[in-house]
Amino acid sequence: MKKWMKQIAGALMTALLTIGSVSMVSAYAQTPPADEEMRAVWISTVYSADFPSSLNDAEAQKTEFIEKLDQAQALGLNTVVVQIRPKGDAFYKSELNPWSAVLTGTQGQDPGYDPMAFMIEEAHKRGMEFHAWMNPYRITTSGTDLAALSADNMARQHPDWILTYNNAMYYNPAKEEVKQYIIDTVAEVVENYDVDAIHFDDYFYPSNYPIPEGENRDGATANARRDDVNDLVRRVHQKIKSIDDSVAFGISPMGIWKNNTSDAEGSETSGTEGYYSVFGDAKKWIEEGWVDYIVPQIYWETGNQHADYETLVQWWNNVVDGTDVDLYIGHGIYKDTVAGEIIKEMEINEKYDQVDGSFFFSLRDLLQDREGVATALQQYYAQKDATSDVTQPEQPQEPMSAKTAYAGRTNLQVDGKTVSLETYIIDDYSYFKLRDVARAVTGTSKQFDTVWVEADLAIHLQTGIPYTINDTGNADVMQSGDTIAVSSTAKLFLDGEAQQATAYTIRDYTYYKLRDIAKLVDFGVTWDEGTATIGIDTTSGYTA
Image (cartoon, rainbow, N blue to C red; front, side, top):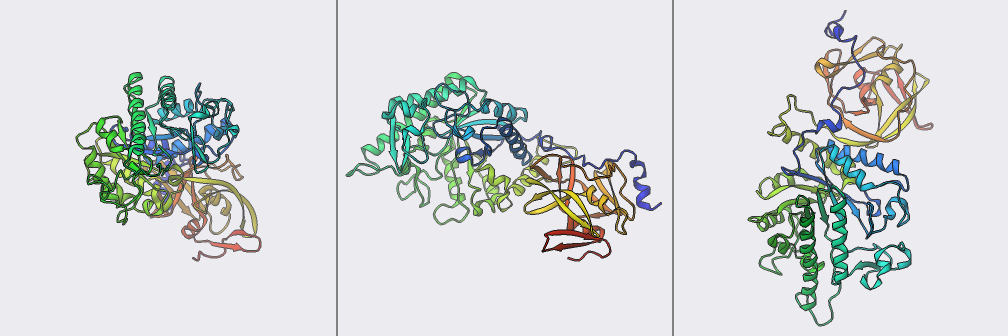
């Protein structure tokens, strides 16, 4: 018996083909809670941007949300900020706002379940916070036809509450009835749901809403608009605290309050100013304590000529210093320039004492791993947790990257014989189950066995012997559809020698690129352009 076989002989009776690595949920069960470090992702529902991808299908929506929660947690995140009122509508049972059309395709139609109650329960199961994200004033993103709204929509019932601009409708922030309606909307959620926070985004007055002719941006009308927004912010905060003091109120304003060319107290920038463009005085909200946390959208890269990232982090850090307001930084990872330098930005945040965490916009960009942002963040958080007092794992987990795996089957030619194998597409590459490839080449000169050895958390390949363990005689039937893939933490050995290859764990099985397996075992890989068929040639060796 070969030396390799002697080393694992004792393990063969109990060896499993499946990878016994920690699941995505348990891998981050000890992620620091949000009150120690905020690690949040915005989940946008307007336009179904992040969720849901299906209409009028409660079970599909539930499954999708669970998968996305698991993906977020696998990256080390501890908070989801879900847009539950995107356009004066609701992802929850409400007496004030109609069911969102995003759920069913028809505004006002009951989706057959309570999405927010479900989402909160699933988030809390995982020890994650749930922040209920509301856009306070928006009615439509496009269109001014009231008849297109559901009959129970407040805008349709009270057209005098509306202002229109750029072919869209908004609730008028100057109306007392509007203020009370929004306050009541917030109160309804806090009273009926176990939310951890109410979250407003950066939409207040429509951007650059015109000022009357003859007035300027610091004139009576502009100041009155800011006062109306301030009044709402103050009263919403007051209402939340009167119901449940443990529920936080946070706002994510535009990243620039004012440029220092407009006000000596502004930042050394030259971009769009939230104070003037949407009449949002975020600095005042902090100074007055009308918010529990602030998340400025610093959606620029370092060195940006109009809005340098660190310049703005430092400015907001100084504004928050000495207050009871928590500061989190909003990162615009939908931009390649930001996604590509995310670790640089995280390291800048660490330099400033008032920065207590980050929000990432948005989920789809994380799950697509734009410019490697998900991989980088997961490794950053995993390393941080492994050395913190919070986790102290006995054996720190290797970095894991969560990605979407698209299910399919491939007719593979093995020395001219067709074999149908389960595959998953990840980042445009086909990944095959290791055991399926081992079974497919059994009986050839390039046959190999694959064994999981629990003792050293490793997959051992042994060339020259047939695949035997857990053999069912036929390739497995597809387990289900698209799912989550997590980069494998298992070590890999070939005839006792350590090897390196990209691998993903999908539903407890390990998947590799066919060419990586071919390189290890030394068989040829062919491609027939005419029939779009990939093949294995065991009569030849591997060539790149």
